Length: 143
Image 1: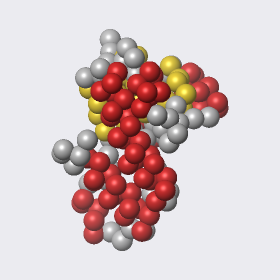
Image 2 (image 1 turned 90 degrees about the horizontal axis):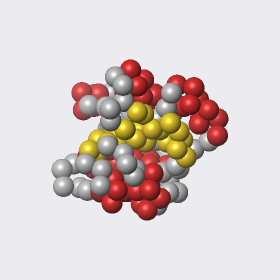
Image 3 (image 1 turned 135 degrees about the vertical axis):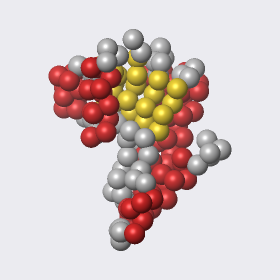
């Protein structure tokens, strides 16, 4: 049984991943920001840990990752504006990745954005910025 920390466990992708992990006998640990989210995670069988990736530092995140086998970063601002996108999808990924290294976590997975197949659609400027940040953080050698 593996212990997996899901950063963004309260979102759509994170909650689906948690159900799959639990269904396969793994321990799912999920981050949350608000108390009501912790209750919802517990009900699903996920061990909730408080962590606001915007304000948390590398050391704080590394402490949460102690004893964790894998980290999956599913959090995302989804085009909610430049500032939040940069803080979550940009700096949040870098901090979490650095924290995983500090904590000795050997597996760090980043769930990214839509494939370029959607590029023919006209998207808002904030969504285009979201795509740019996601692509930049996922490029080999960027972190």
